[in-house]
Image 1 (spheres, rainbow, N blue to C red):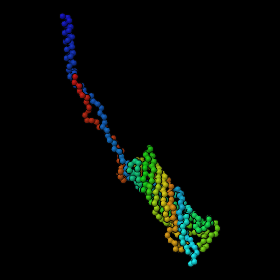
Image 2 (cartoon, one colour; image 1 turned 180 degrees about the vertical axis):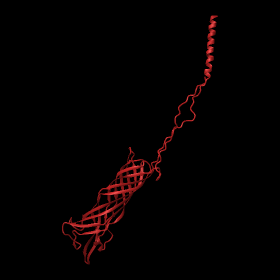
Image 3 (tube, helix red, strand yellow; image 1 turned 30 degrees about the horizontal axis):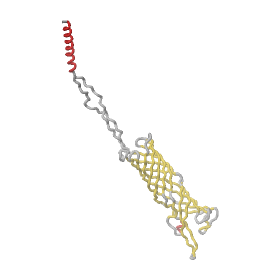
Image 4 (cartoon, rainbow, N blue to C red; image 1 turned 90 degrees about the vertical axis):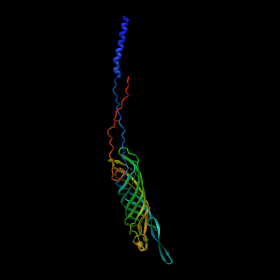
Length: 316
């Protein structure tokens, strides 16, 4: 009897515990929220392409070249004395050091490639000398002085070699034309003894030759670096070598014209101009003249999914 009562009590206790636990199992567990991740926001890149303007000042170093000229020669004939023109080498034409100014308009395609059209101007004094044609040895020479104005107009292409901090080195090359305009030349005969020519002594005599102006082919190479002052304004410094092809230099003097010779008497063989220069370059950017660079993109506030993610409810 006692054993029966104990068994009955244990069964009732277990049944009671199961009855109390059943409502708790029927309850819905609260949802668990997962922190949503912000959606990726595309950042628009600002184009570096666009127009730019530039202005420079520079220093051109002395340059030396040579040339050739025509001179009178004569010989006796049975009918008198015939005069004709012969050609001789002119030994030295040297420019002085001088300053130059330059300006241009260009277009940048991307962060590495750009082109521009530039115009340079310099004015320089000239000195020339050579032995007198038709005289032996160094008994006679020409001591000449003049000046010249030189314009160059060139189309240039550049490759920017990457930006390091604020500094961007570059290399470039250009093709174009140059106008060399000579002023009048003072031509003086210098000799160490009396030399008889043209019917009288020429030592110490002088003449004046009218300068010529001509357009020539020109090309050049450049290297330098720019420094970012702002995102649009650059300080540019570099070196440029320009070769100008040969062309007309001077006409005949009064004595030669009186003998019936006209036109051009002398030519130069061209110039190699070495310059260092510095200036400013303003880049408009934005893909077109005057549009300016767009504002830097601002990342908006993160966007979240409107409905939170909920774990699956487990019914027990």
